Length: 252
Ligand SMILES: Cc1cc2nc3c(=O)[nH]c(=O)nc-3n(C[C@H](O)[C@H](O)[C@H](O)COP(=O)(O)OP(=O)(O)OC[C@H]3O[C@@H](n4cnc5c(N)ncnc54)[C@H](O)[C@@H]3O)c2cc1C
Ligand code: FES
Image 1: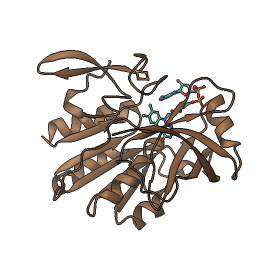
Image 2 (image 1 turned 60 degrees about the vertical axis):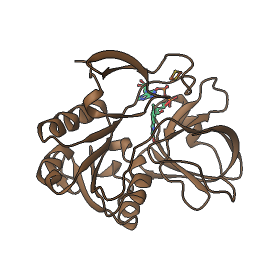
Image 3 (image 1 turned 180 degrees about the horizontal axis):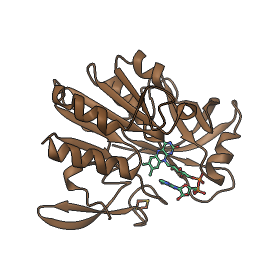
Image 4 (image 1 turned 120 degrees about the horizontal axis):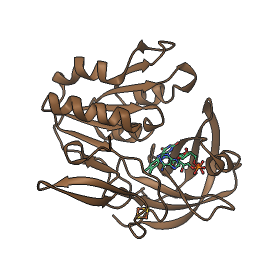
């Protein structure tokens, strides 16, 4: 899919949970050429390297990005005011591959939840299981329900939804679904991939790596992938971020 750089008008940039911001950018009247699981590479004022943020939604001419303040770059982003413009390189990467007639169970862990909103919109009545450390970090539940998803919320400490991990729910419910799509922290992805392997359930996972160029030119985001019995290096930005869970070689 073709990407380009655009200066997009910032419509809003609100804090929706502790340190988590919802940025909406006006994309223009034309349809957004974005598939679910792709990402946008955002130029942060005064920083050389762009920051990758998943497409949370791309409906009605608005590009929505939901991000957590982690360091200097995302802090500067969180201080940007509506009315200004944001320099966006998008859409990048290969997202989730969806097929018609397939029943999908989606799994989002923490700040891996945002791409599951646009993905849920493109699936037919999906199950969306999301997990957060505690209630202060819970996001997007109403949006997911409005997208037609059945939502199951888990928190590690039981302060909202069910106490426990997304994999506990996935184990109970996976039998009703054909394929699993997941995005979240690496330990969660590893657990989801292992469970899907055990249950012989197809699974696609979206990986996160530190990035620089975002377009396959610098090797910063290399990960080990198993292909035809051999381990080779691939780029998360260009070949992913979404990979078949069976192909990913997790470290440790
Ligand atoms: C494909 C992709 C999609 C992403 N989507 C989202 C999203 O939708 N919402 C969101 O909040 N974040 C997302 N991230 C992570 C986000 O890019 C980083 O949190 C951000 O770049 C940190 O920038 P910073 O300048 O604030 O922090 P830095 O000062 O650069 O780093 C602060 C901390 O964040 C960690 N970090 C930096 N870059 C990454 C990274 N790429 N992945 C994981 N940890 C990182 C560092 O190790 C450090 O601990 C995504 C990352 C990738 C690769
Ligand atoms: S970030 Fe440069 S190759 Fe992926």
